[in-house]
Length: 193
Image 1 (cartoon, rainbow, N blue to C red):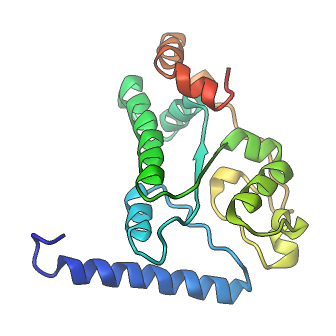
Image 2: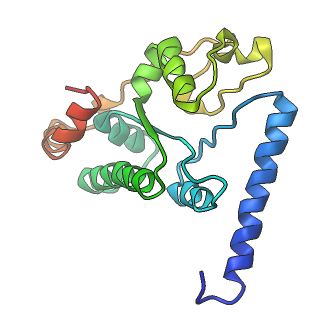
């Protein structure tokens, strides 16, 4: 940032804009927490690099790598499964590195468990964030105070959260074996085996 003229001031304006957005969203929703659901760890790192946000808690939401590769296939991505697995692993390592670098507590949870056990996982999230659990968090349309956004939760119009769609059928057996072999430690870490 120092080598590019004006980069520091642009970065500061970028962070300030995100802080204003979060403040506005919290006020509008009358909420206590703002979860940035973007998958860009650079943005999280920029946020954590600010002294007032250092040590802010992070949440790493992980999806089974076989289903994740299948989901990418369903979206028309044709890159080799080995490259997708590299990307999946790199994302997890980067999140862990950012957590260590900024001494930010990291909660890892799986997408599948969040969908199948929403209350238990929301309780874990609330504990991690230091806020009390409220049943309204799972019924955002009823209470209007908490919002879970994004299609990955597969929230229905009545507010219920349905189980994730199994995408493993889109991944050839040979690729599934490769994924299991290359991701053994992470599969154990996240209780996928």
